[in-house]
Image 1 (cartoon, rainbow, N blue to C red):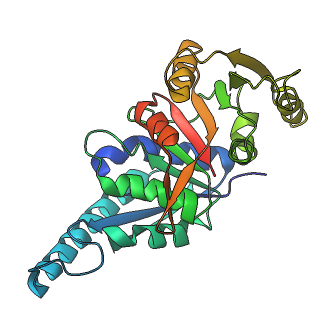
Image 2 (image 1 turned 180 degrees about the horizontal axis):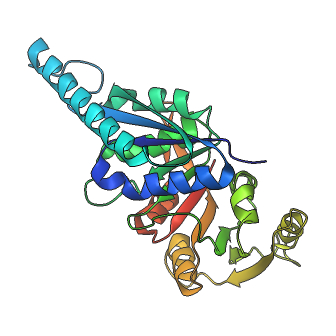
Length: 279
């Protein structure tokens, strides 16, 4: 397994530097094609006229979104012009309520989507919607990159959050190309159940599976000494100088649309290193 199609979405060049640098690094290492979608978002409506709206206002907001998309495309072309990878870029416009269908339809043909951290300064509701759309509508793994992370070449140590769930195992399988490149994979288990199937050997079968892929792995069993599991994982990643966290993405169904679960959202809010997620 390898990544041959890397996809990223740029809405604001100011917050896209880290994600684009990481996407380029992954594409170069995997000899993959990088596809960039520059998206202008109409944030004033969700697919219908609000009370008192006029056709003029509607047209004005669409034109503004188109200008933002074209400006982002120009920035991306300037940034990628000297790179020695295969890449392509295009622009599109979407209303806030239609992001899911657009991103889902495009992301589903990628092997990996690289996105900026959806929470923090300069991020709006559209940033979270894009992550959700790629994960749940596109059913593709997503690598979320915090500000300041410039590349993926330094993944010496990776923390894998293991809770025996289908989502966690899916994320691990999707992350195999990245795990193979790491010096060490830390299978991190928090408060394993005393009566679970792995009670006598937590993480043993997963460690064996990874070893058969040529991955060096060790197991860390931690106590839940903080209110949230995500707090424990982030602290462990920080204390062990990990470069990435791999975890399953969990969501809730609302009006037939999947949204990030609270634990996943908090993990992304507090993440200091890149987070690889799959559902």
